[in-house]
Amino acid sequence: MRCVVIDVGNTSTSLALYAGGRLSRFAHVRGGILKQPKACSEAVQRAVRGGVNGAALGSVVPAADPLWRAMLTRELGCAPLEVRAGLPMDVAVDYPEPRTIGADRLANAAGGVVKYGAPLIVADFGTALTFDIVTRNRRYIGGVIAPGLPLMTDYLHERTALLPRVAPGGVCPKIGRSTRGAIRIGAQIGYRGMVREIVAYLSETLGEGVMLVGTGGFARWVLGGLAMPFVIDPHLTLFGLGRIFERNAV
Image (tube, rainbow, N blue to C red; front, side, top):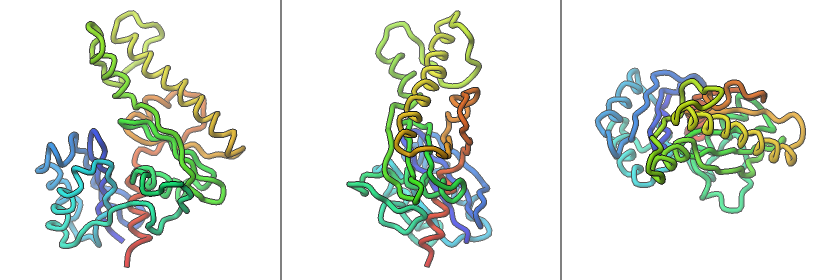
């Protein structure tokens, strides 16, 4: 089974070719189809070389969805599978309002149980920081949403007169001997503290033996050096989208 998988986020869009459980031909387009439609189209064209069975679209940006539908239908000759609760997948959704769950969170849960088993907590470090929970009997039951690293650092810059915008990443000093260094410590070390506390809180409900997986663009920067048994899987969302496509293929 071969398909294009597209993860449409608020800041950027990632896509790849999913074939037989493997991902390749990765592309990352900052701004996504709303700002760079040509780059998105070219990325899809590269991914589909050799033929595909369709596409799985996981989007948290409703304004972008019509553009993706039109472009994928034009390039592939068929409409994409739009990931949402209610589709067959490798987890059962046990949630009061399933339609409100983001496609990326469903993909993380579905892909996570296939690769790592359950119980499971997936922490996704993107524009927002989300924690998604799968119980021992493979039920998706919800999670936690917190501000993402870009929101933290951008807000400091936008709401103060003197603090610069500092992009997450780079070496974190022991002591902030510059404004940028001080902000970087607050972002990385402060985030590690938040992750530690949230995981401890969630683990009280799930019990022992919980698998911890980190994904998203900032996962490695935050989790590197954190004394917690996280597996870092930067492409878990794309894998989950591919897995959901397989489960729904006719």
